[in-house]
Length: 311
Image (cartoon, rainbow, N blue to C red):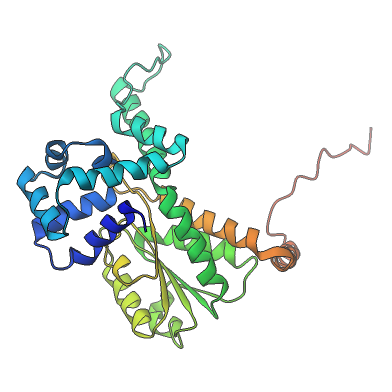
């Protein structure tokens, strides 16, 4: 176990017993590991809006001598990452939204709106970069192993998380026939979870603010000894505390609403990995699915230019 992993697991293990102020710092550290590596204790305290003494109290709570020792573990993690990721992380820390975008003289879009578009682009790029770190890659492999060994796969995503859940369910059904999309149509949540048990997997998507009915269904699945894979925004989210595998995604956005770009992308990556590992069986199932879709003329096809028979 690396030093960074040890420190991270200490934060998660002690999280439930911490005061609300210590929890706020611990969650920030878990969700923004690059900040810990790149910022001083004073700068980090300013980012979390707590006194520096709170960080010292947190270090004592998890049995670390000093913040410098803690920070060094996070710096080593950053150095061990692929150069492209480390470089992008540093750029993300120090970037500023460009305000010098040249627009045509007849462009009706104001400079401030161009700045917002630039900021959205940079933020979504940053969300993807942070979400595809070393920890995510290992977690994706572990998630694939659980899904491949499952009797049934239950996919859950409510409200804004539904598109990510549906994306996975739609693509997975092209090569797998053991999936249930828990959408609760006509109030059938209980019906759709009937028979769920220890040989099954629930793949649940939920970002803050966490939807109560998602948490209720997750609690039920866990009570039935079902393996939970969470797609969520923190290692200490209500989902993550019960999960066998956490796929932690970044959801920052300059908008009033959080971003689900990384969540959708991770679900697509999970499907791609499952197909890549599925061998000839997966290819045959996809071919059968395509043939069935063609019976219903599901997709438009360009027939090419039509010849004028009278010419």
